[in-house]
Length: 183
Image (cartoon, rainbow, N blue to C red; front, top):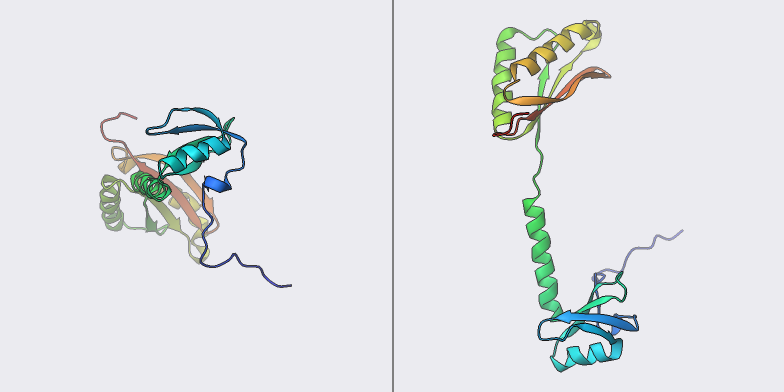
């Protein structure tokens, strides 16, 4: 069976423009345009009189809403808005801290300092105890270690998920406390 690939070079337009609009009547909006419901032919005539395009911006409305605008400028504005939305969306960073079931106090303190720095930067922390070979018999030690870790970070973080064993690892998820809010 032959695979079908989309045609190269051509990008599907997200909006219907001018002759591609199929509705009989449309609601026309835009600058220097008397807003109202017009037959499609009249709406296209209004757009061409101003040397602009008729762009269907809300096809699901009854009747569909079309805007009289320069299409290339309209597309540019839409891309710009999408970029702004994407930039404002916060990306959550998850930092991992690994323990063994027999982690010493010094190592514990060292990793605790790292976790505090990660939380201050606004990153989430995924702490886990990795059980190698037969160390799985020390599950209680791992759980105690993670709970001690969570307790030590009490003023910097809130626990998102209590210690949970999955395979050979026991996880604990911590999220930074929001500054200024008491949670």
